[in-house]
Length: 59
Image (cartoon, rainbow, N blue to C red):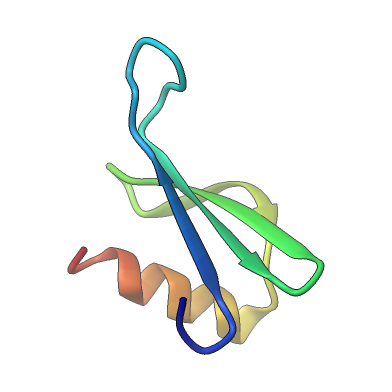
């Protein structure tokens, strides 16, 4: 958790493809593909989206 963002990671290829993580910020939710670092579903406010994707790159 950082800057109000909550990150939950999922990686179980046979159960929950593709590898991704969920980002929660208040009532907003986004799903980010771990391989591409792109939001694949949902959405976040612009500032929080940038923070989440910047966090994803080194992690």
